Length: 406
Image (cartoon, rainbow, N blue to C red; front, side, top):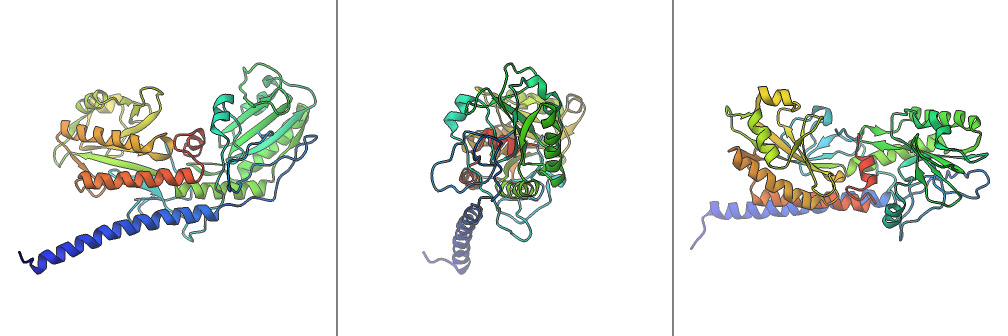
């Protein structure tokens, strides 16, 4: 059978489109890996605590082989890393998170305008040791100050420091003997400690720790040390500021969210009471943040969420009195331990909700999502998860939860 010129043209166009998608995905992955490779560097600043020998200060270290462990460690609803604008993973840049208007397909943060390579790639502690010992300081993502008191102290002596507010997460640790595992401190923690560590998170989705925040952190530690009394070792504020900004750029480059939209064609709408019933039947629970959350059965960790397409919060009152024309199911890739499995589950849930509500499953441009389109989005989830792992930020890990939290 002879093909017409129109049919030949369509075939050629289809082949070119598929090739273009493949080339784009390869370019995207190569670009992220190039930025990661260029980021391996180590700051020169490495102050040592008094009478403790040489100590490695919180740095972003080269990763030629296995991660490096340390005996001494210093003291620590969603936004975005400040320098990252929101954009589609495979589309042109869009508005930032402050102007986020669902529905959307894939959300990622754009790099800096000058495309400066992101500085540090972070290393990680051995997972097994961390699990066995409980929470430990993470010198790669925290600014750490070490205090060595003149005599062993209880957590109560740190009351002023434990309750300090720095604008970023602050954690305190102590250990009962040199080289012992660190213990996360609270005001009611029992025991006495010969070494203390204050740890200030360098970056989260609200952006990098500022020079003023880090300077305040160092000043508070300097004021607290003579009150204990304790010898103090603190890092250089300027170097830590640079490190915070570099870490924030790196996180912005691999911060990805995936959204699937269930939409009712206008002028149809979904009554809030019906939506709540369907959502709860599907396993969601209404959370205080104005969205429904889907928890993992075993751990209670949130796998994905369901939000109003109108960018208005869901509450018991609004669901009882109003209606909406659609919802968005959102997967926060960095915060989920198994992003691919979570996406597969979210996809099935979205299909069921669309069928139950007689709605359409669409992308951010309101185009119907078929199995081929969903498979392509799944591939983007894999790329995002691989990029996080290459940065030594395992999806769903405590490190990821800290860096990609508000």
